[in-house]
Length: 268
Image (cartoon, rainbow, N blue to C red; front, top):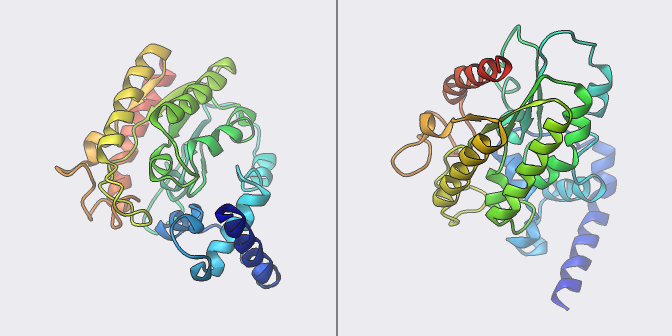
């Protein structure tokens, strides 16, 4: 009965705002902590009467296109043929915001492509891996993911479940002759949209697994975590104002680490 009530409430909320959202064109992607906050089903954490129009729009989008295949479909079709070493950065909001928010630059002059989508988990990323990575024929892919799984954005995700998604993406890439760079999950001591989870130890455990798996699978391990972490297992406000999403100063630290990892990978 509880699940039926939640479903009914969700349906009524979606129906009540669908027309208004369509009329105003309110479907643009927001690259911020706010975007991450609406990525999780709000009915997990608040009564239906408190759900905002923005959250309903997010639920509408997820119901119609859960992996968000539509986000980059047109961009992918318009990419020019490239003879150089194309590299895809594949991830969530941390990748999505890189070069798209004020004060950040995304590797100017490099043949690198940003395919991040705010709020996504590894399960969603796996479903769009063929379209947004394999289909672009890169020499390498940088995968930065997992923090939204730990935050519970799309429901329960155990470490073995997250690890399986990393394995699948790595195997798909390697089967298509794409070299893989596995980036650590960035340090987080608390998620603003899911407070109280105390994710630091789970992030450390996932990063330890990523390091081991990279070594056994032939992937490159990219360690952002050590360069960004403070004593609490989070990031200082200078590097991430909300504790999750890097500031320009945070990206300034990350960029040379990524570039070094790409150079090592392509030299193999």
